[in-house]
Every structure is written in structure tokens, then in C-alpha cells.
Length: 427
Image (tube, rainbow, N blue to C red):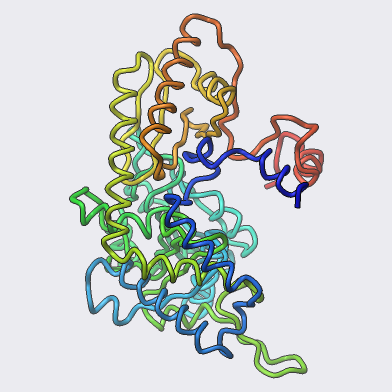
């Protein structure tokens, strides 16, 4: 175990990655509860919850809560809604688009090369899933204010279009797309609307309860048929744990893949994967019962306070600015210097940060952190900016979601991928 401890100590600390790679762990007290509960079920396979009444109870209760949060406070929507566990946002989006394609095959048999229309800000996993499913993604550039161009989306709908994808919020810009307008287009043209709410699904409802203006985006919106929402983000479940939610059983019917063509009878799993850890379900079940709505509201209040303090600090810091966002994500851009220099300077101080390329910005996933840690982050940010202005700091950091900073310590699979694709990933 000494070697294991040494390896763990070499990882980015939870504090220094709190706004990026180690986000979504919550405060220390809740994290202790979550992982203690998950540990008790670590050896159990979630594929076999049909054999275990206790496991089924945990799944049922968590999914009922998820459906309620995705129903916009509408009891009728909650009554007809359905949900499934998945391993993460990629699988959740896969399930949503797979159901979309299956529905289109039944209802739009004339379409030989299906297409979906989505804003440029749509998450990379939508493109990844679409390639697996042989669906063409027609992306529409954002407007100058980084919001989705609903007129452009409408104009791009054609005879091969089977669906629209919106985000709540999108990852690059933190904005909730105009889901209500997208829903009207979906109804008008008989399309499937999938909402990627992996980030916002389990935090935006609490922001709204606290008085924040949150555009409508969930299953209560007419035209929305499916929605992805990650429990291992702002639900604070241990990874991997996400959900795909359905407007009704009619939509969920296009999701399942029962298999009987083998020697052991019916094979049916919740979603795409078969074996999956039950521990994360136990962890989120424990937290939902421990926190309840008051606990999630208190956490949301803390996130809003942290976000507000960072925004206020950047407004006073010469050269920095923040973008308006609809949820817990926050982007920091620079007016008169290279924002990558800020990333490089902050990394030198031990902070792990993510970024946006178009346009360039630092990408923060706001999470609970102590006042002392937040003050240290802001102090380091000011010191770095002063170093850039004085010319003493000139090392750039990466804004890309993935890349190689040090070839000697990079994972071999990534180095191999770079050799395969070079500078131009295949289309």
C-alpha cells in the first residue's frame, strides 16, 4: 500500500483541481458519507439488481428523485417520465441518440442518411456518438453573444433531419440553449429533441429555487423526448454514474435492446453497458437521503456565492473578464494578453485548469471550496496577471480538453493516438 499511497500523493490535490479535474466531490463531510456507502457495495454488479430487492430499492428511489428534478415541478410530467442509469454523459447521450435513430427508422423510413441539427457549442460526445451511429451532425455557429442561433437551426432542418440536440448548459460557454424554441421546431417538423443536461440536470433546479433565472430546458418542455443528466457531476455521486431520462415510456421503448439469440435466454441491461458498479448508486442514494432538498439547496447557494466572488474579483482585475453563464460553469477571458499565459502561471502554482479554444478562455467548474482556498485561488490569479503584465511570466498552459504537456509522463494510449492521427483527427 505504500506504493499506492505514493502514487496518490503525486496526483493533483482535491483543492488545486477543485475548479477543473477534481471537481464534483462536494464538501469533506458529504464526500465521506458518499464513499463510505459506495465502499459497502463496491463488489456488487449493478447488472443483477433484478435479483436483489435492496439494490432495486436504491435504484428505484434515486431514479424517482431524478425524474422529479427533470420534470420542472410538473406532477403530470413526473408521473409519465422514465429514467435509466448509465455510466456517464457519453453513454447517456449515446442512449438518447440511439433511441432517436430507432424512432426515426420506424417513423421516417425514407431517411437513408439521418442528420441532427445542433449548435456549435454542443459537447464533443454528441459528435462521437453520432459517428458510432452513422448520424451526420449539422452544426450551426453561435451568435456573436455566444448564444445559440435558433433561426439558423430552423433553416438547417431538411428532409433527412431526424432530431435536434440542445444543451443545458453547454460545456464551452455555460449557456442554456433555447430549448423551448427548439421544442416548437421539433413539434412542427416531427423531430426528436434530445437535451444534454449532463452539467445542469441536478443543479439548475436548485438554482431556480434560489431565484436564479434559468431558461426552461427539461422534460416539462413540449417537444423534449430525452435528456441526459450526470449524477456524478452536481448530484455528487461517485463516478461513474449518470442518467438518461425519457418523456414517457413511449420514448423509452426505443432505448432497450433485448437479446434472445444466445444460449441463456433473455439478456436485458439498463442501458448500453452490461456489468457496472453498484457502489455509485449506493453513494448517491445515501447522499440524497442525507442531504434531501435542503442540503442540495445549501450546496447550490454556496456555489452561487463562490461564482459571484470570482466574477467580482475578475471585474476588478485589469485585463480579465468573465462571460455571462446560466449555471455553475464560469469562463474567464482576457482583453489585452494571452489567457494561456494565465493558465501557465496558475499551473506553476499547482492549480489544474481547463479551457475553451474558440474564443480563448479559462473554463471553471464551480464547486464547493473553503473561503481560504478560494481566497488563495484569487490571490494567485492576481499575482499571475501582474507577472504577465510585467513580462516576468511567459509560459503558456493548455486550453484544450485533452493534450500532452509532458511526453515522458503521458499515457501511452494518448501518445499512440497522436501518432495515428497526427495533427488532423480523422473525419
